[in-house]
Image 1 (tube, one colour):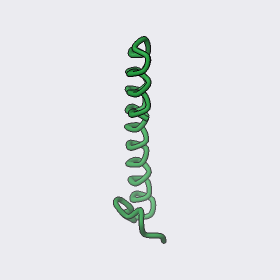
Image 2: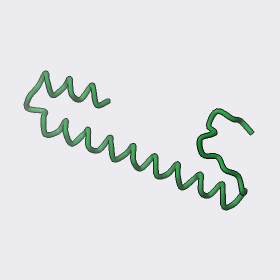
Image 3: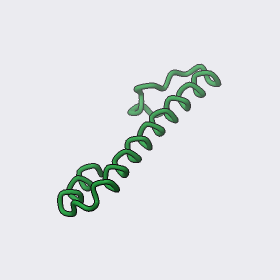
Image 4: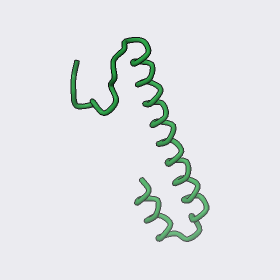
Length: 60
């Protein structure tokens, strides 16, 4: 997404402010998703005594 926004900014200099805001929002959303994942892993640990971090490839 960031690459697309950068290309948009390069093609239309009037979109710099909006493009930078969009990049900032996308990074914040990614951070929220990472935090939500961490919370979910902790909930699984507390409720099921299972560690699921770094085990996305294992299916149980």
